[in-house]
Length: 530
Image (cartoon, rainbow, N blue to C red; front, top):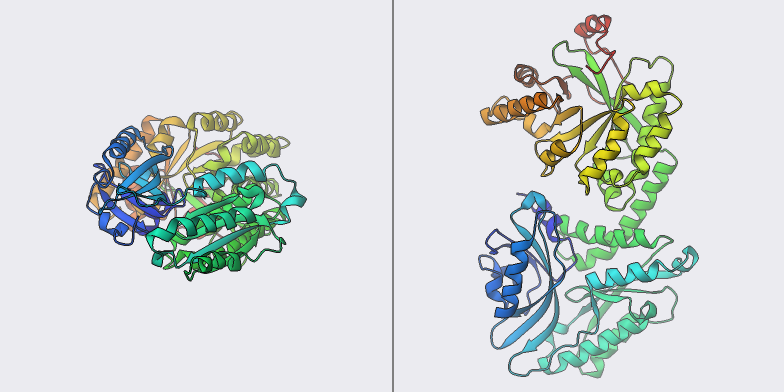
């Protein structure tokens, strides 16, 4: 398994340490800072995490893990790590069982204090962890107007040198650092530790404070040289968007495996905010286009319908932009824009035989807005609905399949077809098949790629076809690039195929792709879905 999907699960919460546990609770992957300099987190690999904790908190961890279901995230669990030599490190732990990694469990640990069995001084808890900070920000920023938000900034602060501080001075220095951060922050409470020596502070942009100098002065008072750097990013007018961007930036740093996330984090956040604003403007101004890739009937090789695919200016592909839009809650407006453009094309003169498939993210089906808007868009020309297919993608999984099915059923009731996209590789594929009343299933291209050389893949696809038939579903094989793949799909009973063998996505839908298509068109092969 590649590093990226692991980190997506592990980075569900910003933390000091990120670990992945197998079904027995044994650490099989670890990243980040250890609880002490003499106990690196990498040393945990191969050991049961519970065995590294004090007995009481070990029992709580085992109980939490035993009850965690796929797709579920635990509440914050207070644990105590036995670091040896009488030192106990306290931490907050969040566990998340990402469905595609189950039964593995992704855990984030945020260290709180040092606690010594022998009575050594404990570090103060006086600053929020990342999760507490995000909660505080949601509450506070929601109460400010757009004009007030314009005057606020989110600063990311790195403090260096604490690893060289003796244990008898740590509590005093941390207390001073926390005091400075809180005094600068909004309401004295919007400061938190993202991980290790990295902090986030929301404050007034022009407050006259030199945060770097004040933090360094805390060390100077104790005779300890500290370093400090702060990078400030305006929040803008949308607090919710800023919070989502913060999380997206953290995860992006981890996905890109940046050697030093501390130095790249603020730049990543700033880039995310700019990309989000650019995406909003692109959608608002319809500054993107649709290209149309043919999907053919495997029996006749006639073009059956087209998938409408978005294309952005100066971009190699829409994938990254769409992923960002889903993470930052921008996807619904985009999905609707695609639908509007596709419907406009279907209404154009000479388009009476065309049929289009449009994609909708699972995130856009979390409420009634998308379906209501699509019904409104097509209300004046209801005949267009019979030439429209909505493909439900699994890039952002449906949170409530039953509710999504109710909404999609409203589309089916007026003649719009429903397709389950990317079937066979995502963790939710069979949940979708079981919970959604669909008309078509699209078999993921990663399976088609090996259909000729892998008998197991052929067997799997044959079962998908058989299952589809029993449920009254047609099937589409995507990413078909060779004639051998197309013939194999036809032999297995797959109804339709899509891929470069039949044509790439083009600005205008091309219904004729060869001599056989001309003959098939004369027989009316593009007149109905069946």
